[in-house]
Image 1: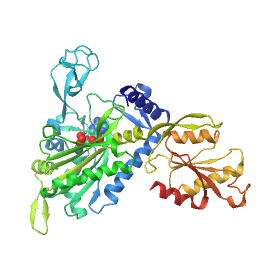
Image 2 (image 1 turned 180 degrees about the vertical axis):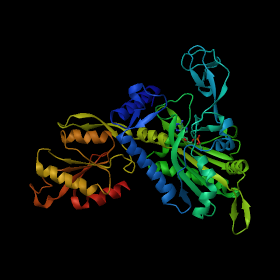
Image 3 (image 1 turned 90 degrees about the vertical axis):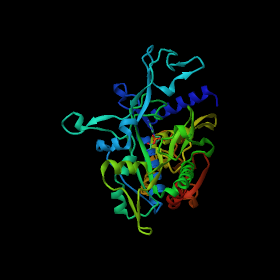
Image 4 (image 1 turned 120 degrees about the horizontal axis):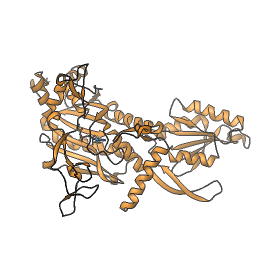
Length: 453
Ligand code: GAP
């Protein structure tokens, strides 16, 4: 696809997100705040489905992983020990011509020296380190003694609770601790919609192991994570694995992969899978003076475990899911004339609404009553949406545009008015193929649950 069509595609996606209630600009009525976003009624469902599926495969379906939920604010000492206070920074450059603040790696260089990507100006300051953590104060006094930061990653809460979780869960190595939660980074230049935000969510696993298992587990987790993205409907050929070169890797990491996705604005990171050695636990043990060692019952040895970390961004994955799902095709309207249909082809597993239920006509009481009965029948099993307004074709289109995979229509056959054999059956329509089948109401819940799983 050309750059122009890619940017048009992105514009259409951003506009659909607002129009249908996936994502809004934060504080929009006050002009917004750069790099901050709110999820609307459909966005919040999509995000929840993604997080629930991650939790299901990373925690519930495994014997070797437990979860936790740490606080966002932690003792400042955590950020000193982890290295964030001294080194969690990006190189920042100011353009003296247009006053833009830029990340040094965003400057353009067309062979004539570094230029500002905004105005093309060459009058730039030297890069200086800008710490990305948001500083705040805890308690009633605002001085150095009360300083801390909004966490820039969820991982550190896991490291500092390692001993407590180990004791209560009685796990043996290798085992992991998983967490989903907010993280904050004062990004110099937030951009590409929600891709680089200042407040976002992470889904992180810290998988603790023996040193000799580290490299093998790095490969294992890379493969597991690729499978995850395929299982939520991201095409394998749009996913790429970048082996982070030695010079770009954190000094303590023995190997890092970035899992990337082909967004309309380019190939960009969704998740990092890093072998962080024993760096984090060692740092916290040193700084806190508390043992973070593991005792091996068999060998009677004590040591600091190593860790492999798959760290995924919720918001980036939501954006990838929307970009992947967005499609336009041709479908007949009410009168059989072909028109453009916008469809979000979400995997049923992550689709915000699983099934829409429609009475064919809203002014026919028995149709409406039956449709409402079906809503009540399905509601304990899946998220359903009832819609009686407008022509049935329009109602299908509205659901296609928000990615609802199934539609159930209650018609006169359901009431047994045309053929007694069809009494208590409905039309089940599938979003992508638009194929319709006749199914018994009593089988609906089972059929839908098995197709969504
Ligand atoms: N604990 C390791 C860690 O935080 P990271 O590569 O800095 O590693 C992990 O972040 C993931 O968090 C990224 O792959 C991305 O999906 C997400 N992420 C990081 N910064 C982000 C931002 N400014 N906006 C949205 N997501 C972000």
